[in-house]
Length: 533
Image (cartoon, rainbow, N blue to C red):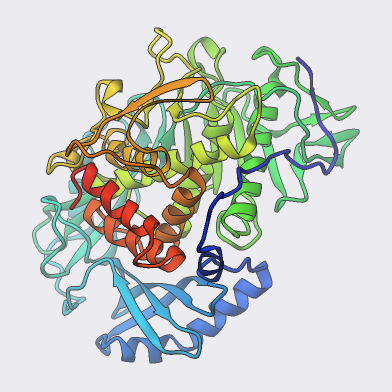
């Protein structure tokens, strides 16, 4: 199987049409406009110029400032502006908010990560930075770790018990680096109370995932002339590059090159093969974002991330890092199963998308929603690709065979089939690993797309139950992922939990299809069917 690279080519993909959509005009009006990088920059600059006035309108205190992070403009003129906050110059973690403004400037509402008012003396620290650093290292529970110098912040996020902080507090944020148990780099953010040294929260910044295999078949690639031949540089998609780490675990590696623009041979022993799959998957994901979500790259600024393949030795995982703004892929068991399939690329790039939009914190329920978002959009990219060598399905990692018995890593129709994930929400969901607390949201997406009960899709048999015994009819995958993306990009915040996700997706469905629409009712019924009421 020879993979042919076509210079400046495009990833071939098609999306299923939305049949019977009687509210197409409304959906189009509530869909984001694609902004070029210069247009987005101007929108952010203009919003920042009005930030003080916006803070006054919201009733924020005189010591609070708003910092614009993103601007989304809908076709009907509605503007969604995402802000971070500072208080007396200190970052407010968990203080992010989204302001919604109608065409003409009328205020339509605001979604806050935390509604509590901030009144914290910025000089009230009782413990030293050295004590905060020591506490963070102890809280990490890992060996061979290092801690960066703590920074003083206002913590307005969720506490150890999972509820919103009743009162924001002065705190230290310490980043502890090292390795996780499977060799994945770790960037653990530990929040400690500046008065007592008690750990308030922690979350992992390296976001991991797994996929379905290594081959996409013979595919076109975006490449560019370079050196004595060609490089895996996609100039048509923000300059995305793919590098070979040569089994290293640091740095960028070597940009993959080829003399005749014909790449890989479909086997893991050919070092280009993993690069082809990663590069192709990144191109498909870029195209999916642009075509289906009207988004110009991960951050909406037209700038691509980059990919690194051949990480470590027999490393059985893949991960996204904000620090390098890159996706990294291991070669799998015995270096024979690179984690570079279409849905893995979509999964990892979507961690970057989530970071650039809602910023769902990678811990507890928000972490589960973060992971589910990557599964949801990664799966959507796989269906969108319509690639006969890797057909779309609602299974995660079915070809990697990490367990050695041929079973997938995760099942979206009934997540508990993996032995760890939750099918439905309960108070204990937030205590699970984020890959397992993602189960209810993955189940929600499957049910919303396809409905409940037994059915076969693309040759795969599914049988999806509901918590309340209800029978659901799906609204179609395209509508489902458009609702999820709009909720993510305009209504969710860093601390959104399952209850908040229900509210956000209902708002999104109302915007796109109307509050009395069948789609809105389906979203409500589907959340109820997984015990989110």
